[in-house]
Each structure stands twice: as C-alpha cells, then as structure tokens.
Length: 331
Image 1 (cartoon, rainbow, N blue to C red):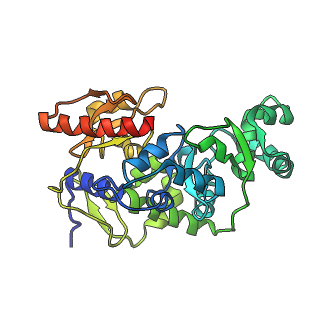
Image 2: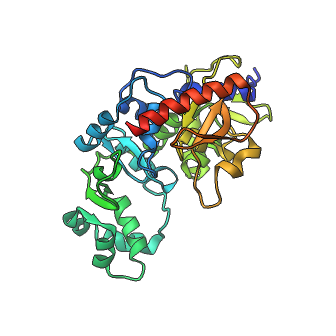
C-alpha cells in the first residue's frame, strides 16, 4: 500500500500539536522539557518564555527550583548548542551526542581526556580560569572536549530567570552507562514524538548527527510522504490533527526549537522569511505564530513587527497575547 501523503498544512498542525502549541497544557516544566526533547537555552529567558507559551499558569519559580535541585540540567547536546534537559533524560542525550565533536577535533579530544579527572576536581570553575589552568594555545578547544566528556555543565545559576553567574561550570554527576546505538534510537524516536513526521534530513538538521549514524533507528517505523514525495518517518500513535484544526496565536522565544527543528526550518517558517528570522550570525528572532506559521517578530515591550499580511482580527489576537506576555515578563 502506498504511503499516505501529508500536506504541508497537515504537517504544520502535527508539529503544533507535538510542540504543545495548539493549546496550553497543565504540565510540569520537567514533563514539557521531556515532551519537547529538550529546550534551547542559549538565551537564559528562552525556556521560561517557551514554557509560558505552552503551559497553563506557568510560574518561573517552578523551573528555577528544578534547576537548583539538579532535576534539570544545562548541557551541550543537539547541534553542539546549549539546551535544558531533565536529569532523567541526560544519560541518553549525552550518549547519543558523545561522538558529535562540535568546536574541537581529535587532538583536542585526546588532550582533554587526560585532564578530565583534574577538571572535575577543580570545578566549579569559570571559562577564564579553565583556559588559564589548561595553559595551551588551543585551550578553548581542549576545554570544549573536557566539558563534553567530563560532564562539566553550565551551573544552574547560569540558567535562572535572572542569571547570577556567567560561564561557570560545575561537575554534574556522571550519568549511568547507555549502549550507544540504543541511545541514538531513543533520541531519534524522541525527536519524532516532538517534531514528526519528519525526513532524515530534518533529523540531521535538528541534531547535526550524520544520517548514517542513526539510520538503524528508523527501521520498522511508520512512514508517510510529503507533497514533494519525500519519505517522512514517525512513531506509532503520534498525533496527526486535521488540516483545518484551529491554531491560536503563539509567541515563541529566541532560538525556539519549533523553528529550528527541521531542514531549512520550513515547517512553521515560510521560506521567504527565513533570512529575516534566522540571521547570518546564527541568531534566531523571537517570533509570532499566526494560524500556525511565523507572521512577525515580537519585542519585550509588547510591540510586534509584522512580516506578512494578517487580518484585523488576527492583529487583535496578537496584541492581546503580546500584552499578556509583556506583563508576565515585567512581573
């Protein structure tokens, strides 16, 4: 039987449902972070705004308490960038991305491996102190390897709503051992639950893992086709809402993975707006979703710069949501 063809609008609605953007849920921050397969944390307030837009009655203190308890960690994982993941998920994510060497090569890794024990004994330490201690011309690259392999993670204080530390690293507990291929499979399936149905290139864009590394994780999964005929992989029993499902206005923070989770980010981001939203320096603007796709960029004072046409009713809905977020940010 031929694969079912999913329209672009059906894929958009599937993404919104799995990213908790069709309706706010009564969930804990830990449950949401796990449901989303991690949350981008390069900009400290980003996970807080991302939770506010997805969780009914979200309070910043609940995430801060989870960070300070160690229930939520701030490691470098997907794409070699900072994310929040739960302590429970960290072993699988760390194992899956262990061999992804972003920002350092084999010589720096080899040198870093000889320094892991001493680095952990010196922690907590700042990046500046680490470079001085390593004392080599390529200390930056060596320290990147040490952080990845030695579980030197950004300290919880760097992830608070108002961070009280910057570039401070602490020695997180070493995670339980996971078998590498099983960890890759788990992480790929988690991606599909949060972003699918999706292509191999989508998984690669979200993770930076070479497609050959995770091909085994796709064996036996349900498949669809998009309107261009490409194979889409999915996990069983994942939501596939109707194309006409109503999508409310939503405000996404900078670097939200709902924007970055696909090849060329086109699931929610129209192609003609890509260069406006995703800048040459890698910055990703905070966006406004109208009818499920990016329509503008919001500012913390509640103003919105529209990037495409919207109706008067939609503008009123955006203004209401922007006022609510602005008030929450100022509280």
